[in-house]
Length: 430
Image 1 (cartoon, rainbow, N blue to C red):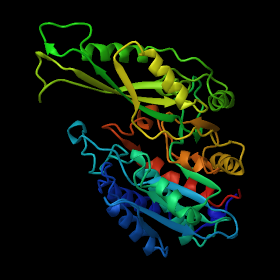
Image 2: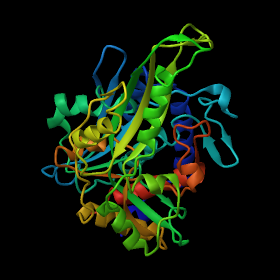
Image 3: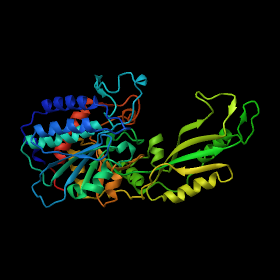
Image 4: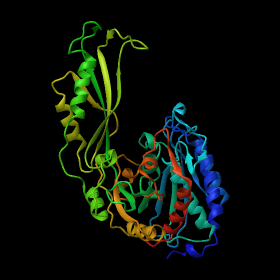
């Protein structure tokens, strides 16, 4: 049992403090683009300095991109650190679609609402409060702990974790990483078991841009060769493709550990196959487009996510072959990272997570998880680091998938309880 049981901390007071800090943090609209995290980095810097930390700020771009690194020494300074990784940037929010303003950080019906509560300022503050609590309690963890808050995750990490790896690897170089995307829920399996998921791998993002060309002309004389018509045929073919193959080993382990099938859900379907989502269509002449003019060009974007082990080049070739007979070009719109296998889930850290979860969630089954999206952890896995997504909050499916939506929120009690879980885990031996 970790020594936290006898610590003098007032957890109710610390939970209140954590909520107030998170509310203030949410109210800083660090929207990406432009990924200006200068205000959020200074906000975290001030909090850490008040508790005796000496955080470092790193300027990684000309547009206000900042990264922040703080260190809590461990009993054995020769051991590689555990890295608590989080990002300060958030995606844009259309305030007209929110019932509560996205940057007001209001509490309603036990939930804290706002952009970034779930992705991922809430988790970042859980990590922050856990290391503050350790320092206040006078507890030195077994190994050094690093707290790294980054810029630019929502655009791929060029000025965030990638920049830190390329320019300051020796200052971080962890053995383990705890990042986003794990959670605790009852809603993914046909059984009612509580399952605590630890995210061990990501799907690979491959973003495609399709461009169709055709005969321009008057809207009263349509043909099958009009660019918008050609584009729709191409998109429909791609979306209707049937993907072959078997669920990855991570998904098989999930089902085996819980002993029940996954429920039908867009998320559970996504983690078992390559997925393709149509995300934009653009065509027309004029602004607003003239309805009676057939344009010569039409474009679409597709967000494709590939299972671990799938070669992006092979996938692209298969997409191009699907529309080869049409006047359509297919180009990759993002920087594709080499495929990285998931982290193993038989590590000492995974075992420490299981021990900690057993104390706080005695009925829960701990399972590895494949993310349907991607996280900054993929860059650490390329360096041979064991990286997990660990978010100690029990969420229903609706709340869990509210990230990037106009109803993003987290339950306050779960947010506060998660700090205690982190506090205990960081004292475990692994």
